Length: 392
Image 1 (cartoon, rainbow, N blue to C red):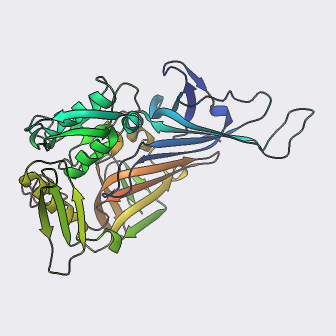
Image 2 (cartoon, rainbow, N blue to C red; image 1 turned 135 degrees about the vertical axis):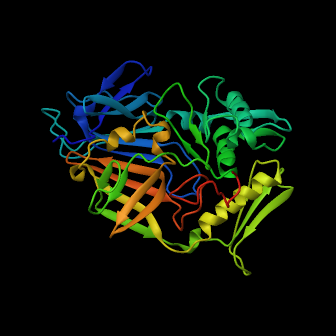
């Protein structure tokens, strides 16, 4: 059967001419972003399982070819994923008919990694000099250019989209960096409590999203009445409060870990979360510590995960909202969730989509998992023009 958001899957040797293999697809799973604020970013992944009859079956693409998933909504085609094939598995099953070559239990599984983070994850920068007073944007670009390429680098997004956002005001520690490119980008993102989102593109690197900038609402969820724009129903919701992600002291090392910014809540004994940043100055490091504490020091449970499926959707636009046409794949956008007459406002961290022959299943992950901090200039997340968390 067909349903809203169903993928058309194709592969390519050059990223330009694609061979469609949709007729053989049994199921597929796409994982975008991360689940929790403290998670490290890794490449987004797409895994698809194909029928593999010995006769008239699909050609099997080799690793490092490109894999693409697209969907059509209201006559417009959107790219949901575009990445590099990292694994190809052929599973031979029974029965097998030697006379005809029929092998109905045979399967091919193809797994791909999102292009921008794939390159960064395999790129190695050697002796990149990051001088004093270098901004985070300039530092990331220098490491990326050395270890990956001087073209198609990261895109830096903030509020406002100008020289005053965190990427152009926060200063990186002066050092000579040798190491993995994605490791350095992860350190930069974590240093200013921000986010990263890959793009389904072969010409652009990942987007780095200023953590102070909560982007506009794209869709919402409700267990009943549609109360806001692009409201979707859901069939499962999980609230989370976990001691593993609840801390009363945050320590952020800066200036090559020669100094530490500390934020505390309550009194000893503290439960401490300690991290090392790539920041030079204590003011920015203190803001990062304050923001992290505001999120992780709260113990009440709030929505962490929401699931829905295509057959439930009253509005067909959700796949389009998650496509390449929305900058950053909706990561870092605010979402409202109505549950038993109470509306919770959360921030999207990532999502998984699984499709089979019958339906598409969506699972979204939100932060803050343990509370809701104040955010600069947000009438939903805090007091207008007030930022108690620093970094603003």
